[in-house]
Each structure stands twice: as C-alpha cells, then as structure tokens.
Image (cartoon, rainbow, N blue to C red; front, side, top):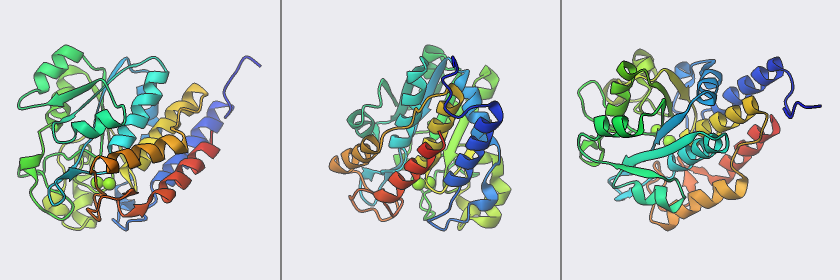
Length: 287
Ligand code: MG
Ligand code: MG
C-alpha cells in the first residue's frame, strides 16, 4: 500500500474531522458557545492551511490583574505552527512584548514582537499567505479591547488584529480560533455573541476571519486544527501529551496564569490540565 493515510478514504477523513469539530466544540466552561460554532470551518481551515506557503500565527492574552500572560493560546499556536512546519511550511509567530517571553519559553519561534503600527511592515516583510489567531483579543465595536469580564484591557493589548483587517485586500487567507466572543475572528458572528454570550454586546470582537473555529477552550480548537491538518496529510501531527503538559507548565513556571482563575497554576480556563490531555487523546484516537 503506497497510501500512508491511517484514516483511509476522503469520506473517512471528512468524518474524522467532523468528529474532531464536535469534540472541540464542547463547552465545559459554560460560555454558551454552541450557537457560535461554525460547522465545517475546522475542515475548511485545515484544507486551506494544508495549501499554505507562509503562515504567521498570533496568540497571547495578557491578564492585568495578575500582570502575566495566560495558559490558553500560546500552546495552541505552537501546536498549529509545529504541524505546518512538519509539512514544510514557513511558519512564524507574532505577539506583543508582554506575551513574547512565553512564546520563547515554549519554543514558538521565529517570533516577531508587534509594536505600534507594525502591521504593514510585517506583512510586507513576511508576505504571509495565511494568518492564524488563537485566543488573541480583537477590537470591539467601540475600538477597545475587552476581556471576558468586560474590562477594557486596550492598554495591555497591541493591535495585532490590524493584520487581519489588512489581510483581505492583500489576498491573505485568515483563520481565527476563539472560545469567548472577544477574540480575532468572532466578527463573523457578532449578532450571535450579542444574543448568547454574557456581556456580548460590549466585548464582541468585530474583526472577522475567513474561517472561524469556535471551541470550549482555544488550545483545544488549535489542537483540533493541528489534528485535522495531520489527517489531511495522513500523519499524526498533534503534540504529544508530554509536550502539551510541558508547555502549559513552562508558561506557569515563567509566571503565567490561568486566564479564568488568574492563579499561576497549570490549569487552562479553570479546567485541570488532565482534561486537556484527555481531549488530546480523543483527537489522536481519530487519526
Ligand atoms: Mg477566550
Ligand atoms: Mg480561553
């Protein structure tokens, strides 16, 4: 058999990606995301990224109350980047100075640190074919950036979403991964966020992406995307449990916090790390 695909026919692969989409769409944190989920977008995002050449990935959510970055986001960004790099894609990461140390700590490099008005320069230098955001705040209708509690955290948030606003005119395909309604990409379903998410009318991000992966925890959505990219390539491109655990623990060791509890402990969105690892195992079982 020359075919190295472990999942078999195109139909089987599509069914496996749909199963992955259902797994990552679980809502253990009770954020009422069911109505926001965009069926089919996981597969579409995985397919377009499989055909990408140069991918720029952003994440990083600063928690002012803890003066630290959170555990949800960078591990997911790294999972997607590692999957794409394994397929020979040119991958780079971008975040702001406050979150950069966590990226370096987990080996998410090469890393570009976004500073004021950097969008045009970055796009011209790197010429990405695709942009991906994982748990990265995007501006709300009033131009400010809000956390889930409705606090204005604009002061701590470089406007990385500017990249995504410039992308359509440059023919760049965009993918967003989010779990709360305030992340880059959620501009695709603003009305639903208003209706279903607590403080939705205030915090909803108005920046859309071509493909939007709504999930219970953003790292989970990113793992699902890495898993789906692997399915299409006939390979297991998911991070190992040791890697996934190690990355969350490394972020915490550097002072990073759980974005929900704001405590510096190896949990993600208030959920024990074991829950993320169990989900990763479920995704892997589909490959
Ligand atoms: Mg979130
Ligand atoms: Mg989250």
